[in-house]
Each structure stands twice: as structure tokens, then as C-alpha cells.
Image (cartoon, rainbow, N blue to C red; front, side, top):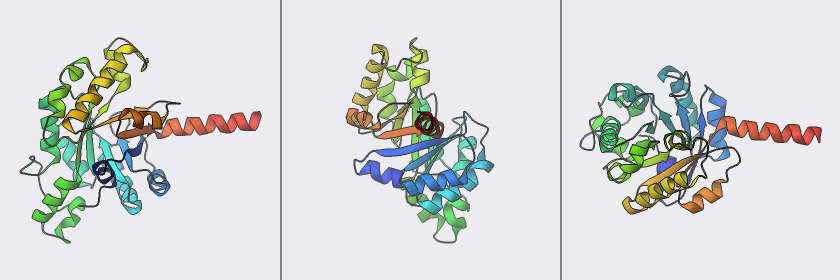
Length: 253
């Protein structure tokens, strides 16, 4: 299994910085890797992307040594497996509300004895040509990542059992849907939101699990790192909008 830059940095106590992509862009995958980002998150939930469109982006990312994650549309093994076979390092699943959903994700991502993933001669395993499949399965369990998104009041209530799930690597706070669920849509600084995020961070520290967040326009990544977030994401569109606004402002005075 190819080296997972993101997982290595997290294991060393360093934050992982990444960008979410919602469109096919091989150049973006390469450029982000060359710039020094740790991962790309290919969003197949809020886009028209699918396995066929993800494959060339994985190849481009491999060329530049950047970790690939995919946010899948469903937490089902038959949906998740083709992305893993294509070579992605990690799977992100939304609506992680309890330990059962966390366990289902881990079972789909990991080979036995950690999970129930099916093994085959595919791109991820170099078609069985560079090492025995049994050896690949061991290395894949070390390099792959299972990540859930907590974005509901139920998920907050069950955060301890979720983060205690063996094999789950991290949880990302879905701030937009969580704020909607808590009745404070679009207000990340509302006390209800801050209490929820602080609770997740505290349980993450207790269980040794990484907590992530996706930044909105204008949010400071350094302040999030100082709060204890280990995964710091941002949408490519947010970076584009910010740079475009500055360019127009600079040009027009």
C-alpha cells in the first residue's frame, strides 16, 4: 500500500492540512501536492463525481505524494470498496450517529482481523505483482483511514461510543449540518455550537482520536490548530473565491 502522508503526520502529532474537491481536476490534485498540502478530499456526496472520475485523480495524487480521501454517498461496503480498490487512502462517511455506523465503516475499510474488506488483485494492491496479497492486506490496514462526520445532536450525544470504536481514525465536525440540527443554522460561534465542538474535542483527547474541521471563508487555520483540531480542511472553491476577491479588490482599488 502506498505511503499515507496524512496518517504519518497525524501519528507524529502534526496537523494535516487538506483541500476538498468537488470537480474532476488532475492539475488541482497535482498542484496541491506540489504546494505541500497533506491530503485532498474528493467529495462524491455533494457532487456528480463517482468512481470513474476519481480514478485519474488518484493517479495524479500518487504522482505527487498527496493523500487521497473520498467522501462517499453511502456507508455501505459495496459503495466503499471500489474507491479503496482504486487506491484511495481513506474513506469519509457522513451522518455518523453511533458506534454501529462507525463499526460499519471500519468493517468496510479494513481487512481482517480489523474489518471485513474484500481482497483482490486491483490497482491498490499493484495487481498482486509487487508483493503477496496477504502482505498487502497488512500494509493496507496500516495506511488506510476510516473517518466519520458528526453532524447531528444524536452524534454529539453518542460521541464517546463513536470515538471509542476500534479502527476509527478520526471524526470531522460537520459544522453546517450540525448548526442546522441544533437550530442555529450558519452560526458556528453560537454557544450551542461551541459547546458541541468543545465536547467532541475533549472526547477526542480522551480517546486519542483526531478531530477535524472544514474551514469557512475567513476562518483562521492556526486558531483551529491551537484549539486542538488535527485535520484542517478547506474547499478549493473557498480558496478560489478568496483569491479572486482579493485580485479584483487590488485591481480596482
